[in-house]
Length: 386
Image (cartoon, rainbow, N blue to C red; front, side):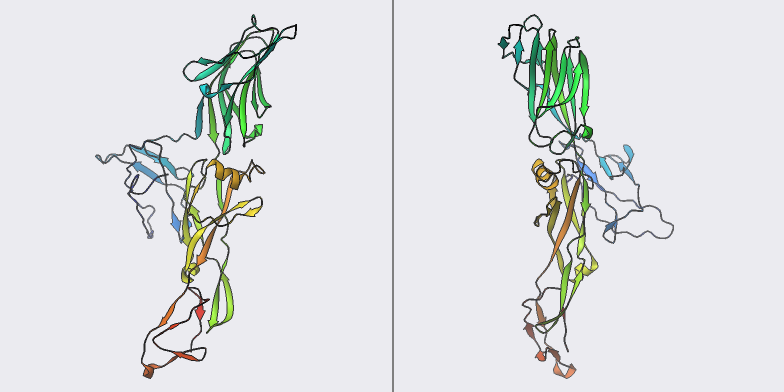
């Protein structure tokens, strides 16, 4: 998420380790100390256009502009991630007061039904529903609910509370009307639902329900934390390209080659992260006039069409369509892509030369100080001349 010239001064360094050298020092000025939102910086070490696997650690020192003293010292972790004056929060916070009152049903021995009790504020951000024994007996059911976007969410932490002590006072968590957790009696704390609970991700409504049977209940929700899913970016080989050998306007041979690859700026992104794809064109690709065109996403139905961009925003819509397959594989934790490269059009001008130094013939025709018709040719193709 860091932006060049806004959050840091861009530094590109190509260096060689001489015999006996074990480290290099690079200074990258950071400007993000007053950033409104957390900013992530990533360090990528490459060799011949590919990430270096032999270098697995580095030291980052954050130094204030007005001082030369180190103010913090930390090791870069496996993902080469660190924050400057910020703590990354990888969950979405939903206050309890965002919940709405659900359906309520209360009946006594005569079978009469009562509806419409109110949910009342609880503390600063919470909301609660009260099931009074004296008013509703013997059985009652009331709930709070909230539509939540669980696309790209790996777990849910709900902070809730019930002061009713009877074992017939029961509190449950439902997602899309299916029960995922149940507690009896009084409690106060967090409940976590993770991957093992196998909850749905798309079009989800979360309910907290209080059931009583001849007893008192007071169920409240303080907050909800939706933990962002961390995805692995897998880059598969780019489709091969082909260059041709020509004899005049006649194609004599074709040869496939691998044009290049891309490096994701964030190898293990979270939901809502922005990934930049950094093209790495191989030597053969440079020789054949290759340029980066975009990327394709691998889904359950094969690859998508080419998306002409070098960035990927892991929004709910993108995850739902390209990773979850619109609901067919909601447990997928990998984003599989492949880069697409394309070749460019060619042009050829034979410069003027003196005949006494020789002549140039292409397919039996002499050329001097004129354009050669490259219709059908691409940059990097081979043209046979005599």
